[in-house]
Image (cartoon, rainbow over all chains, first blue to last red; front, side, top):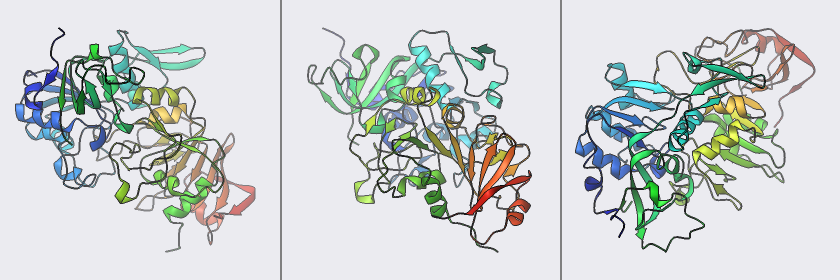
Length: 237
Length: 220
């Protein structure tokens, strides 16, 4: 029998995230694609010195109320307890936000380092990591601050930057349905970074709206193969 | 204060450029207003970086679905033919030259079409998001922005002082005062807001503007 991947709670599913771990967190911006319950569980669990890889730096509970009535826990919850030492992502914060985010405040105080990466480069670095590649050349960022310190190469007359792969110890993922083997399907724009990050971590932990018996997902529609997935938790949203 | 065009009017003027069948990406903030413009018989496909093609206008409150949003976190509506993909595929489309047109906001545009639209003094953690990829990958880059800053300083400048998004990528700049095209010889004032003179627009623009022979009043 294959190992049981179905976990009873998000708290159980993140229990072994260790101090100093690198954690990818899926989603793109707001609620829909974010594994909000796994984030909340990680905040409760309390692992420290984390490196977080995620598209956005999070807005913090207060600001999430602007996006969904009642608010929700996003990555902002992890800074509140000083769990993060480094953030790698494309939108640590947005210039247009009405007030400073938890990451912005901690960055100002010198508690969190930020590595800023254009979204297309971020997602491709994760794909490169997932696919066992040593990196890739991209035209994105040539002639901008992103190019600083990077190897450049002219290919067919066009300049490119060398970008290196990203992998992680854990990935926290939101999917729509999982089967008991761990295969995943997504819903709408909640696929975003989730299906990519699911392939790049040693341990991929997924919160889903529903778990179904193996054989009940349409094999033509499965997006993430179960071999990538370590744990699934069914959570009502 | 002389009256400038409002955002909805700017959006309508930009949407007049949308051609049947185009794949169009609308950047964060003001450009998303273009999706609400009625295009009549024209059919375009809105692409959003998170991973959707062919979404409809902003969703009414009672139909809000948090798993159907654009890249600015705005819930959008279902449209026949709409489809989803992951963010990696989305940026393959962007860098691979499949986006016909992107409309983005900007802090500054230079006379050679350099774009600065992410980093500003005082907000060091503000990220570039997908702007760098869209700027280098899209077939055409249009800018939708206010002509001047809150303090009245020009946003169309000789050289960007804010960090660059990409060099020489901008084709047309739509502001609340004018439509300015970035040409090989420099910036061309093509259209102007009702009630404004070329001299008044020039006074709020750092580089010299060439006046188009067929200069028109902006009409929407």
